[in-house]
Image (cartoon, rainbow, N blue to C red; front, side, top):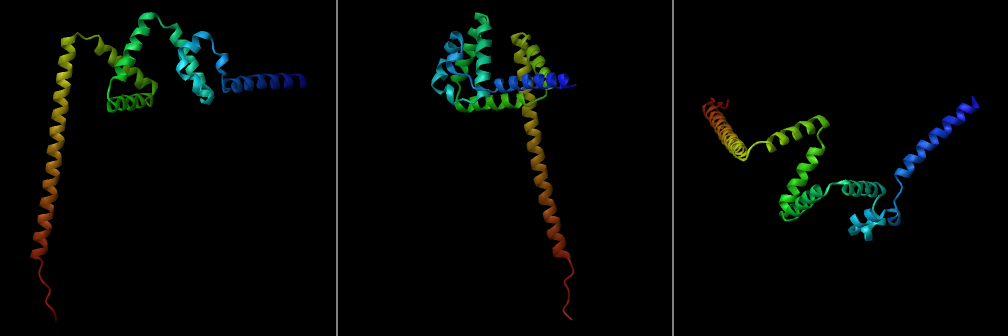
Length: 175
């Protein structure tokens, strides 16, 4: 019984030490040469970063190392395009990214499939789809405007009815 308890305690402490190690900060010198090359812009602030952020950056650097050259070029091109956007455009993209990350895995998968299908369309098909989408958005905006105007007219009519009712109430005669 004591032997079983010691084995369980040892296994638990090994698991716990693995969790603790995963949360420890990574000294800059512990990074590989390739990781330091990729993360060199962060060297001066590396020690101030939280351990979790260091772990994520290290994983990202390792993923970058494994990317084929063509995918690296695409990623760099996307980064340049993003940096050339206005602050407002970048903020909108970041908000959409946060919203996407807030979706369930199933919802993300569905959106990726829709995007993939859109990318597989020919350029004329994409233009036609964008045109139809724009028309639908404009129609919805017109419909909402009509609804707002109708609601305003209803409120105005109700106000007039209330005014007429007030005017037609019999006046009380003082006794």
